[in-house]
Image (cartoon, rainbow, N blue to C red):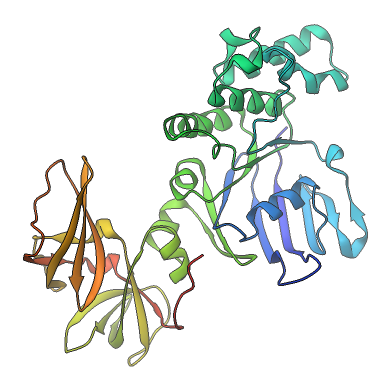
Amino acid sequence: MTATLEVTELRKQFAIGRPAIDGVSFMVPAGEIVVLLGPSGCGKTTTLRCVAGLEHPTGGEISISGRVVSSPGRGILVPPRSRDLGMVFQSYAVWPHMTVRQNVVYPLKHRPIGRAEANRMVEEALALVGLSEYADRPVVALSGGQMQRVALARSIVYRPQLLLLDEPLSNLDAKLRLRLRDDLRVILKQTGMTALYVTHDQAEAVVLGDRIGVMRDGRLLQMDKPDTIYNRPADLFVANFTGATNELAGTLVACNGGYGVVDFGDGRQGEVALLHALGPDDKVRVALRPENIAIGRPDGANTFAAKVLDRRYQGTQTAYSIELFGKRLEAIELGTAARHQVGVEAPVSLPRECLWAYRDRGPLSHD
């Protein structure tokens, strides 16, 4: 039976330094996949380990299916084996001396399940992960991707309330990672299982998650649906981390509802989207994705002259470096032909809904 996970004001302080987790709160409804996304050291894996019971929080509460499993303030700490969890690690963590079937049946041996029922559950789990025909092979004869499928089957065979996945695809090569990433969401949705998934890979988070929580320095900055994270980032760090790597600085000179006009210097002005409450004369930093810069297609008020500094042909797209307002920006244009020559000036269009203005709080430290 699947469960709701609730994390409230979670805090984890190691011996020295800032807290690894600093007041993190979120809820995962039954059957939902939530992905914690962020750079190394942001606290996402520590959060997962606290939910698993492998780390002991120093504050806050964790509830699974309405049952409090961790509350330092109330002296509650349920051990991992009593939380009814499944866990898939970065390493495959399979038993090399066993067959695929023996690996998957192992968790059922310590449960009051008859042999016929256990065999049925194993067959069902192997079918889910696409390994039915490999059941009697030695696990060491499998590829990395297949071994990770064995680990997944072993974690879901007893239908735990909650499945925790800690960067399970990061040890696979690029092609296998893409294939298993796409399959994994289908598998999890077929089981109807509640899942908490940790990754530093934005594409992985978007494909897998019903919602994504972006973390930095132990704090949860934003948790929302993938399209909201990508189209309305809560702050400059979320925008940068999810691909809006271009930044422009300026001063807000006018506001009109959800949009405003920014002076980028020397009287060059453009319309931007205001995702925060901002007013005239506020210093702003504007984030923009490379794929939202249109080169050579003048379109509306936000059209400026830019110089092409460099180009990198990548087959299905071309990446350009351009100079705009004295700043180097990256632009990506889809298509199998590189259309713009290095050294030429070309008009560039910046759609106002893709220019996100945030209050300028000084230089952003990129993790």
